[in-house]
Amino acid sequence: MSWALASYACILAVFRLGLSRWTIAGSLGESLPYAFASFAFLLAPLWFFGFGAGEWLRDGIRSRWLRIVSPALLGIPYLVFAFPSGDFHWSLGTAMVALPVVLAALLEFSALPPKFAWQDLAVLGILAATHILRVLAGAWPQARWPRYPLLGVDASLMLF
View 1 (tube, rainbow, N blue to C red):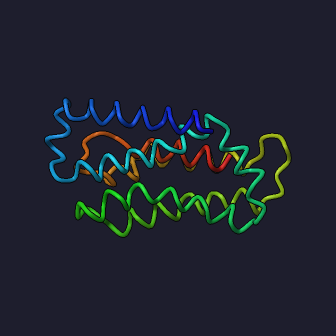
View 2 (spheres, rainbow, N blue to C red):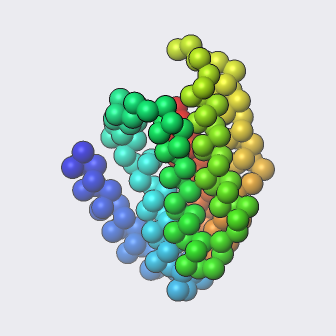
View 3 (cartoon, rainbow, N blue to C red):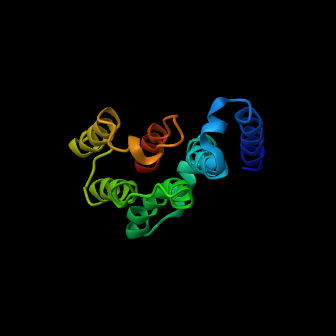
């Protein structure tokens, strides 16, 4: 896991250096540190799931309620960006926290067989519809680069 952490830190450092050369840095102004922190929180699940965090979470979280509530942490990237930049909207904040929790509850309280079930299809359909309909697109209005798809990927990894 130390290799994963070291490489994650390197990726963030390189991204931060490159970010200063893009025009997006100027458009973010004083919100740049919050946008960068938000991106780091969105990238973390993707990166660490690639290094086995999924198995660690699956085996380590024994409490059913904790498995349902822990996906609410996926709302942190939005909060990190929205509160300091003054772009917080209750509807988006609620969706960022509630959507992963509701989907986790759907999967957790279903007696799912090891094969693909209707609950899996429902969760994937809701995630796809959320992305296609751009339900969460207004979450990072100043950023001008779409981070809401990362949230959907993060939720998918955590749920499955």
